[in-house]
Amino acid sequence: MSPRWSPDSVRSTVVVVSDRVLSGEKEDKAGPGCVRRLAGLGMPEPRLRVVAESRSDIEKEIAEALRRGDRFVLILGGSGFREGNDAPEAARAFIDVEIPGIAEQIRAHGLAKTPLASLSREVVGVSARNRTGALIVVSPGSSGGAQDTLDVVEPLMPHILAQLDEA
Figure 1 (cartoon, rainbow, N blue to C red):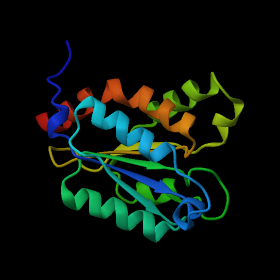
Figure 2 (figure 1 turned 60 degrees about the vertical axis):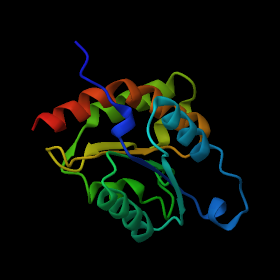
Figure 3 (figure 1 turned 60 degrees about the horizontal axis):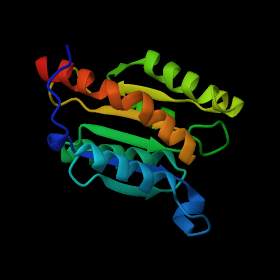
């Protein structure tokens, strides 16, 4: 049985973590692609933010999304292991319960397409164990990695949010 799913009440933010996108050196394709996909699900005007590869900047955007009452926060990029790739650590500062099985599933989905998927440090969890909780996901910043993430998360989101709403 599938939980009642009402995406029109799920506010969301997509945070792109990239110095090169922020400076205009590189065009962001992953962020707008995810926003279109979330809007296509019926989520009202997903918010797109671009931040520097800085843990404090990432944390500010997550805090703002949670303050706004967003129920889904997708962080694209900053999930590798170079200097400045601090998205997993930033997200964990807001996660009450980590859901490692979903991160493993995202990685496995990506590995079916590219061995580079194993280089990403996905993190998935919820910010609280009640109806105020949001699903927070750290994803690779590539368009393919971002779409792989949504391929896995999208069908699980109704179940996750329903569990939080029942608490």
